[in-house]
Image (cartoon, rainbow, N blue to C red; front, side, top):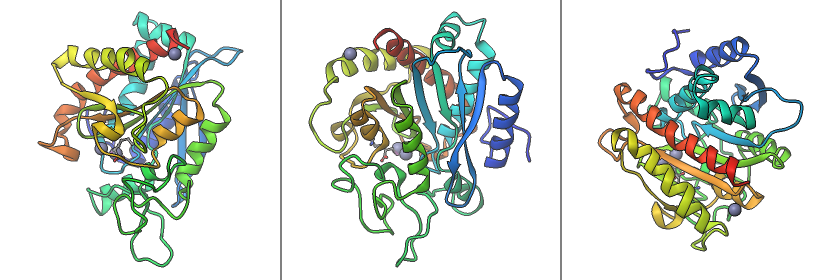
Length: 308
Ligand SMILES: NCCCCC[C@@H](C[SeH])C(=O)O
Ligand SMILES: [Zn+2]
Ligand SMILES: [Zn+2]
Ligand SMILES: [Zn+2]
């Protein structure tokens, strides 16, 4: 496999080897587990990052690579893990976070789709599961969760890019993630799902226009300050708001599902850019994108820690 490089897009084999080596090399801060396999049998590695303690700490769950073509998101999860282990002990904010919380990081959710973007179709979005009765392949995993499933902004046509799947959690990847979060919901206080592109910080709901119960807190504090923190580095401008009105109505999203499960701080990031390069964001923008996004993720983590 090719050498891993945080400032380049790495293929899955390279990412997977890196996941194993970085967790083995930092056993004091990282523990690794497999939450299940993908449709094509690839292991979904989850890294738990934080100082080891005897009692369970509050946790934040973050996933990248829901949609295969959104390569900047895979790069961000790798960047986050690197920043966490390399600044623990030197950066007071990160040290405090890792001492008092855990981050569950799923570097690549849709592994099969990601591989496919490297080998066959760079613009692939969905999973790679076979749809019975159709020659069209894959389900949109961000329409596959139990949150107004398939009622709006999703399609029941297997050939659609937003196909909601044959049933709720029809995708083994969705099932694996939902099972992990369900069985750890007592400690998971925040869910961050990283997408691209549009430069937005979105929160529930997308499957209806009602405001989330914690709307005021989500809007006025965590979100406004989080995008201000992001902008402070390079001036990158984000918009924010409930998904339905800020981007488009869409049902079956993992963020809405996590929120309704009780994970109050549930956000969808849409990283750079605004369309100039879109999903084909140049590697030269990996570092700045990741550095600015780190600031907003750390802000949210601090908010969660201080507002349980
Ligand atoms: N749960 C829906 C959040 C808003 C839409 C997010 C975008 C990411 Se590409 C989508 O899944 O269409
Ligand atoms: Zn996406
Ligand atoms: Zn997107
Ligand atoms: Zn509150």
